[in-house]
Image (tube, rainbow, N blue to C red; front, side, top):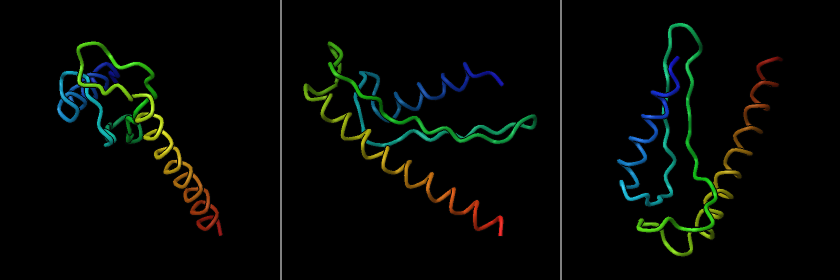
Length: 94
C-alpha cells in the first residue's frame, strides 16, 4: 500500500472542506482504504491542537481554544467507542 497516496487524499479532502488557506472546521475527515492484500482500513483525521494561527491564513486568533475544545470532544467520542467495542467483544465471546 502506498501511504503517500493516502496522505495526498487527506490533503485533498482537507483543502476541499476547510479551504486552501488552512482554515479549520469541526468536521472529521473520514477515508476508507480498501485492499485485496490486507484488511480494509478506515482513517479518521481528527483536528490537532494548534497554539498559534498560521500567518496569512483563515485561522482565527483563538485557534488554540477552538482546537482544544475540538480535541476534547473527539477524545470523548473515541473513549466511548473503545468502551463499546470492548463490550461488544465480550458479548460475542459468550
